Length: 184
Image 1 (cartoon, rainbow, N blue to C red):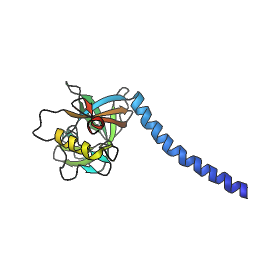
Image 2 (image 1 turned 135 degrees about the vertical axis):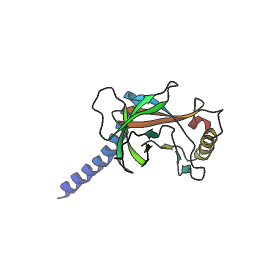
Image 3 (image 1 turned 90 degrees about the vertical axis):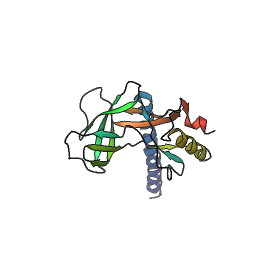
Image 4 (image 1 turned 180 degrees about the vertical axis):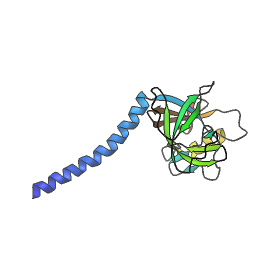
């Protein structure tokens, strides 16, 4: 009986190690083999842009104009097909109810934030940029400054890797410099 209890304990420990390890390996796989997209950031509500140890991100490429389609609902899963504009920043090329079956199409599984009239607003799964706690206040300050509506001096964007519907946020850049480095 004692051997069974020990064996069950060891099994539970292994499962507890395997689950987070698998999640980390999946994210690393996306970062290693995925395609890089730069998402321009947008201004965030100045009263609550930072919670705990992460910066809340907002993106310019989160709105899509619909063509007479009223079948979208809040919190619904959507497949956002990505492309790039002439400057190399991510844009939404199409939004679908089902995952694309074509090869070579980069897409992200996201959620509908709101759908009204002919506009669909998207919530991406990479809207939080986690940081060290002591660097967070300075990072928040720099991010807000770079994303002020009248700030045309600084360019802010998130570096996101995409592979087969999965996305991994690698970094947030302001004028080509990592937000982590700016917050030191």
